[in-house]
Image (spheres, rainbow, N blue to C red):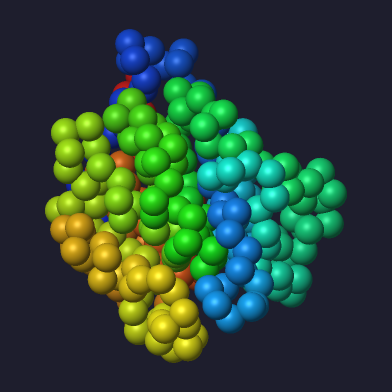
Length: 250
């Protein structure tokens, strides 16, 4: 079950060029931030651990291979190291998995045609390096326009703020979108630290922004765009990706 799911047109996902089921890659890219400093505070940040580990768990359980990418490659700093979370704890206990977050593939070196979906994990670091990264935008656009799924959770939708399709339209325009809200940013006392208000920016791009009360789960599905509001939405966002991928046209 996908709690608090806002759905606006969940059309089946086409396979890649040629439409053959043999071309289904069963591979997902999880994109992590390289940015490790929280504005001018001197405090560390990065990707929020459960917003990578929970989706990773969902994708692997569904039989998908998962690659970790980042704008620059190499180290993706972790934040939110809650080891009372069983999935986090299991991830951190796996030295090979942790090593992969320290040696991520640079997005310019990745081939978008290999992936069924791209998932932008959140964490405050994304607010600095995701929005203006042209390679990131080109990668996501290619995945989407080949019939794949683009997904993001919490601050991960910072990757969508400047993401245009080949016809010049913003991907989020006219679609239901969830992300970390302005109220949530104020509640964690970082509204004056982040470089922009994510909710406001998505609204300015034409998104139909949807939200649950602070820190409660919300997942929005609009065509092949899946977004989640906060850490509580990470699992549900990944599960919604799997539902869309299961509807691929043979």
